[in-house]
Length: 159
Image 1: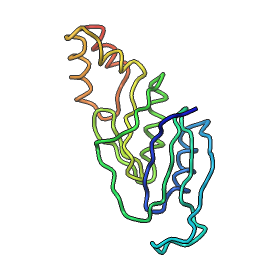
Image 2 (image 1 turned 135 degrees about the horizontal axis):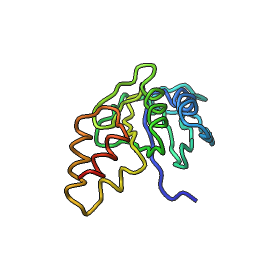
Image 3 (image 1 turned 135 degrees about the vertical axis):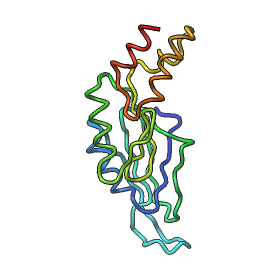
């Protein structure tokens, strides 16, 4: 049983987000929806309040808060990828329809949610006790927008 999970606030895009994330992440499971009842905010009764989904094993709640809130860089979702092809696929899908690449493997999807699309080895490279290897990888990361696994592995191996 999941003990903690993230809530992603949107003004009124929860149902659209479910469809989008299902198209990006194979195997996404859609859970229960809840709906607005009578409320002091003037939100239409019966409209979607929350939608629960599970992406890559991580449960999320998408909330239609009906107040404009913006995301920022202080929170992002990290997606470790087994291959460059997987990185490329997620990158293309998550930036489609109005998303934007950032730097160092980060991107913003069309809803404003931040993602880090990284090689699965990234945690190993970033937590190595070998300072030269860690610094070599980070120097390469700083040069990139979408991360390139081969170049990062070479930086790690050759440091």
